[in-house]
Amino acid sequence: MSDKRVTTVAFGEMKRKGEKITMLTAYDYPTASLVDRCGVDSILVGDSLSMVVQGNETSLPVTMDEMIYHTEMVARACKRALVVGDMPFLSYQAGVGDAIRNAGRFLKEAGAHCVKLEGGASVCGIIEAITKAEMPVMAHIGLTPQSVHKFGGFKVQRQRDKLLEDARRVQDAGAFSVVLECIPAAIAKEITEDLEIATIGIGAGIDCDGQVLVYHDVVGLFEGFRPKFVKRYANLSETITKALTEFNDDVKGGKFPGKEHIFK
Image 1 (tube, rainbow, N blue to C red):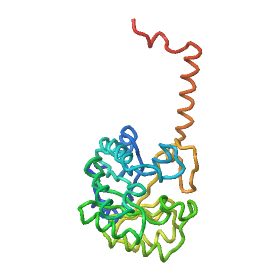
Image 2 (image 1 turned 30 degrees about the vertical axis):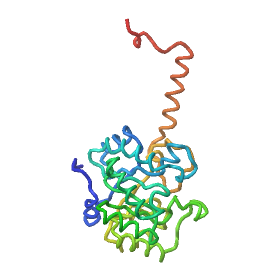
Image 3 (image 1 turned 60 degrees about the horizontal axis):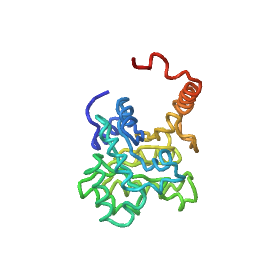
């Protein structure tokens, strides 16, 4: 593993070399430090924090100021990983001016290296404007959680022609990579082979150029809905609950603090 900073340019180089790209979410300094130390290529400060950190049912409530706050903590921790700031609902949909200003806040105030925004052909004007303002953009097509009410829930997206068109359009607009979420594996493979930019899959099969998951899902800290595409590598919720229960019992039972914890 190289200590060299991963860049947006490196995503394209990794695709051309056939090297898989790894991405995880993080929302605070200690988590980002752990993820960065493990050699993960990119950290997404996702608007998923609305659900896994704030306890909301969707990603819609999280604000721009909250995203900046969390991204700043993550960026401060990262020595190697590319830091991606996720543009929240209504931070770019209202127009190009808002989009450029808010993308700029991620880079200027929070220290992110690029931004991510949801949507295909409909947001290509926004992607083009942000990239022309010298800020790299990661696109996101397929299931776009900010459109959950439009889709009628979190559903697999199967419209092959539309997905291919969206992918080509965001590439032409200047996106350096694109997230493919909840897309049948065969369609995601076709998109990946069709594009020059890197594809990052989440529920889109093994043929994408990289994979992203939510940190809390990977380590077993989120006990809400677990999508089919999630692989849980640990159950920290169980471990932490056991530790905290023991602390509570020790205090109640007069076992903590012990002699070794007392100053004389």
